[in-house]
Length: 162
Length: 108
Image 1: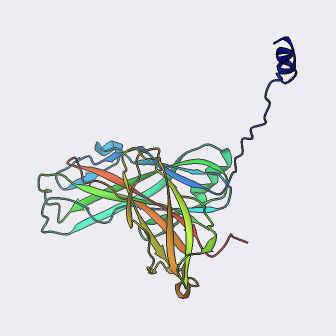
Image 2: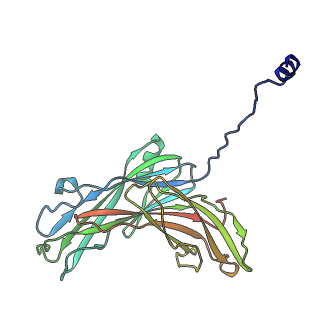
Image 3: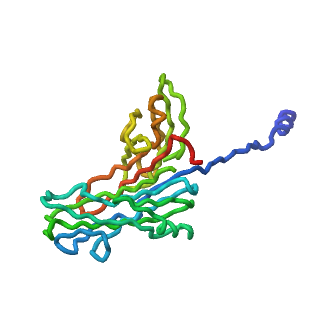
């Protein structure tokens, strides 16, 4: 018995192993909705997301992990995705702006943006987070009152690899 | 959706290539994403995948494969996932997000 304990004690070293933790940083874009927008109804014929009109601007955050890999394209609505039955024309306006940035250099995005129709394009040249807000406004017919009901429109936010 | 510049691999089907992708849902209000493939002019290109619209829960990672015919590969450029927004009963703006990877290689 004495001999067995002595022999076992020779092998009683702690078991050691190296466990590696690996990771990689690759080009990646994540879009999150920071604030859901809603329409205010300042006058009978108008719906608007502008706070002065009683609306809330939708805010989207784009997180980019590698600089100069993506373009952000944000399209403001030009139609309702759901609404009561409408018999007259709708006049849509909208715009998209940079509202907040995680890196000071990103403030240049606003001056460098390009607008094509209802789509605003931003070249995401720096890694980090950028917040964009989209204003949307619609006026019904010849100042006709909009029918009562629920109105929904979709802002299309795209992050496209260059 | 990652990778931004996926590698095109051989598949187990003759004359069909495969792209392995991964999607992470960071939007709490979204549960479903649609997969699309486009050429440089944003015209749709035919492809196959197990689920054209797939369910991805909040904070969930989901891997998926996209199969493209070899003859369509030279035209295929943008592989995109678009969030599907739900109908609501309050007047609001909804945000539909699209992330697109490029199949024609990394930028120079």
